[in-house]
Length: 158
Image (cartoon, rainbow, N blue to C red; front, side, top):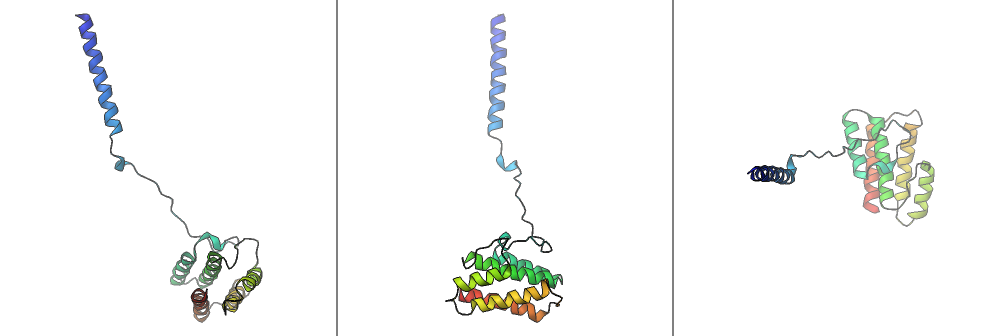
C-alpha cells in the first residue's frame, strides 16, 4: 500500500510539472514588450555632424522642423547636409568627415561634369552655407528658398 501511495504522489507531481511546462511554453508572446530604439536627430550645433547620419529626406524634414521653430541658421545647415546626403546616395560624392566643402565641390565637378548645372547649383549652396555658418551673414528666408530650390533642381537633373 505504501508503494501505491508513493507512486500516486509521484504521478501527481509529474502531472503538475508537465502541466507547468506546457503552460510556460504556450504563454502568449504578445504579452512581452519589445523595445525598439528611437532615432534621435543629430545635433547640428556639433561640428562633427556627418551628412551620412540621415538620408536626404530626413535632413529636409529636420530643416523644416527647425524653420518652424525659427532656427534659421540650423535649418540652413540641415538643407546643406541634405545636399551632401543626396549627392552621396547618388554616388556623385563620397561622404567623409575629413573632407572640406571645397573638396566636395571639386569631386562633384569631376564626377558630374556631364550633368548640366549640378556643380554650379551645389557651389551656390556651399557659398550660402559658408557665408552664414563660418561668416557673419544673417540667414534670410530668400536664402533658404534658394538653397532648397537648388537642391530640388539638383534632384531633378541627377
